[in-house]
Image (cartoon, rainbow over all chains, first blue to last red; front, side, top):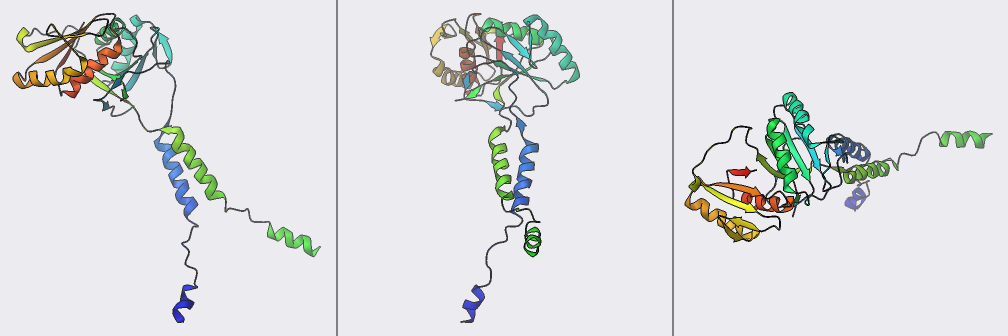
Amino acid sequence: MKFKKKSKVNVSVSTTAMPDIVFMLIFFFMVSSVMRTEEGLNIVMPKAKQIEKLESRVHVTYLWVSKEGLISIDGRLFQVKSIRNIMYEKRAADPELIVSIRADELVNMEMISKIHKELRLADALAVNYSTRAI
Amino acid sequence: MSLLKKEGIRSVEMPSSSMADIAFLILIFFMVATTIDMDKGIGIVLPAEGGEIEMSSKNITNILIDPRGTVLMDNKEVQIKEIKGLVESIQLQNPKMVFSVKAHPRTKYKVYIEVLDQLKQANTRVISIAE
């Protein structure tokens, strides 16, 4: 009988701290994540299986190439010939620069070769071809 | 009078029971709307300008890609999916082998990436990109 009496005592877990925990999670997600930035061109990236992650976003510059042959860096359109100057400056500012080429799968290799040439002239040699996972 | 006063006292506190719900809603929004670093790709290092090195031709396997996406490996036509296996067997015979990928100007980037992907899957150390 006495046991029954005891079980009548409020057994529910205190939920007063739940909002605090949830707010903590919110702040974590708000700080740790970057909003999707759509500053580039409209492209369909090629697929690949053996892909590696880029370590950090800090050293990465995105170079967008659309199938129409447009080239965009940091949200601005450029001619192929001017890549070398931009990349040279970026490379000088950050020796660990990685150029992530985000090209459409229908881009001709002629364009990619030109970009390679420009990047080599700018001494920006670390390149990453952005791909989708299969 | 007494009724009014009573009501006033009752509604001083803001109801906070729904705060957790609101917080959850925001939490779920942020979890859905954000992407945690999704940058993936095939990494290569381009040769420095003027840093071309002469190599003995027996240590080079040429991989040529034509505009239609046909791949020639050492002058033999191969399927893209076969490259991985072929490259692995070549590497067993000659670990120093360098694979040189050369694409026609009108080749599609997609095919080029598929070939590079195959080479990467075969754990190729040195990939050369001929222009």
